[in-house]
Image 1 (cartoon, one colour):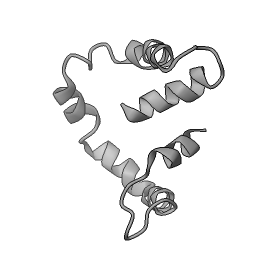
Image 2 (cartoon, one colour):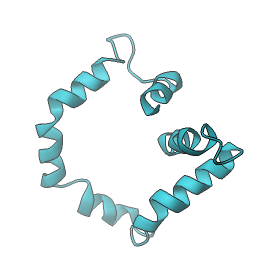
Image 3 (cartoon, rainbow, N blue to C red):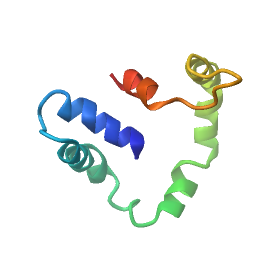
Image 4 (cartoon, rainbow, N blue to C red):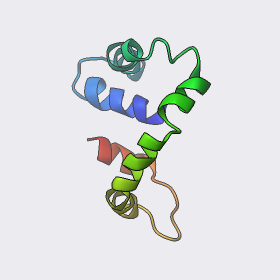
Length: 93
């Protein structure tokens, strides 16, 4: 939810399409997320089983493991295990 909120903020509030964060979140949900998730919104468990926890997704992660690790290693260290709000906002920009 945090990423969706930040995407809405960057896409609509920062560009002055929307006046506030609430409207920008509503717009990104209505324009870019909800139209593509109608049947999955009702049953999140089966969505995860059908579309997330499967061999095809596992293959994609394995093929891109080096790139994904490099991306996270840019922000993480042994003492720092999470990406903070400033960093994720920078990534989204």
